[in-house]
Image: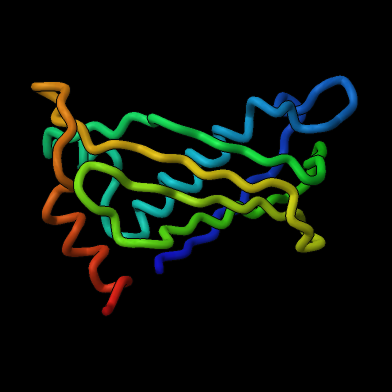
Length: 137
C-alpha cells in the first residue's frame, strides 16, 4: 500500500456564502493529493506526459461527512490500496480537518492512455517499477 498526506489551507475563494467549502472543489483536493502522491513516488504528471501517457479521470465518487470551512487546514490522505494493473489506477482519498475529524472520502479512477492513439495502455514500466516496492507480495 502507498499512502501520502498533503495539507491545504482553505482560502476564501473556495467557500460559499456560509463559509463552507463548495462541494465542487473536492475534486481539486483529490487532484492535488494525487499530484503530490505521484511526486513522492518520484515522477511528475509532466514527466508521465513526456512518456506519451495521459491519465484522464474516468470515474469519481465522493462522500461528504462534515464541512470544511474557511481558514481550515485540511489534510488530504491519498492511498493506492493495490498495485495498478493493466490500464487502470485507483486513488482513494480521505480529507481530515485539524481536529483529525474525517470530512470527506473519495475514490478516483484514472486510465493510462496513449497520447497519440488515445487508446488505453499499460502503466509505464518506470512507474510500475517505482510502485512495486510498496506492494511487496
